[in-house]
Length: 456
Image 1 (cartoon, rainbow, N blue to C red):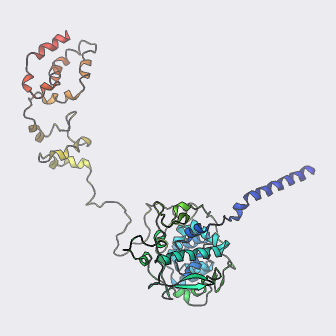
Image 2 (cartoon, rainbow, N blue to C red):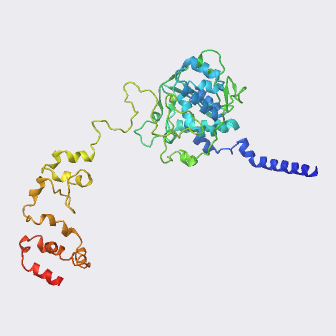
């Protein structure tokens, strides 16, 4: 009995120690971010309209739901308008996602950069005031650089609240929202030359109608979202956001946040002129690709193979990109073996263009050893009329090292020495330099008697 009680006490102590060791991992509460790190995370979206920005902030508190909703949009590409919001509501998604399904390009961007938005959601849930200050700090820099101005797509209002300058961004048309796109390395510091207008650093895609978000009195409607910049808090359904009454429960929680490489993002240590190597600003697409493999532990965002063929239907007037980098039949290069079989390459008009190709082809004509000139084609034979007829088969032999010629007579065996002597006498004579320029010296009688004398 005492042994069992002591064992139970020991086990309980071990469990308590283990829980204390893993408490930071279980609670998943990261350390608070510095103002510069918050600016780096929020820089790609700080210039969005206020209502859309509050939807993104509240949606980022559940990164697994971002991936689930993006997969659901890819599996339902035909839903639009009221049918889309009704179907999203039936799925049990949080109100922020019911509103964001009308902005599929924003959701897809959030899924592609899920680690950033997971960190944004943690910062927003822990301290909305710090996130509010970061957004206004970034907007003030863009306004000072001349990049943030009112135009046909948005209205920028400068207000004074509590002795602080506040920048409010709203759609120019209350029924159409234009999502801005920009490069954080340029928009917060302005252009380096006067030839570029600072206001042109913001671009806008196609407008998104708010018909489904403006009709009815749903709590996730567009009019219920916004930001109280004086109170430094976002609101939903005309009330401060503090969580969802009936939050969405993902069927499978498989996403795990990964640490962020701050040096790989613009604005590192507050320097907006710093552009990381191979950095590309986040861009908005259209809808999530229909038919793509859903995000999962085996297929996390951003890890799909680049060579995967596109499953989206081809657009009218645009070439189908299914066979990338594959030449057509008319532009396909001809194999080298087909080039040597055509009789045109044997024309003496351009023999040098075909000589480098023939030695590497298995179907090329026989070549003389040590040379790149074919022996069989008669068109190349007249190019050497000055040589005697008996020298042609022996011309490649002098290319061999001279040290190999005296080594053969030194081999033992009486039958092998007399056989190569008559053939080597003309070979050894062309090897010296006087034999090539003066062919008259070859029949000189002095050379044959000297060789037998050395053999004796």
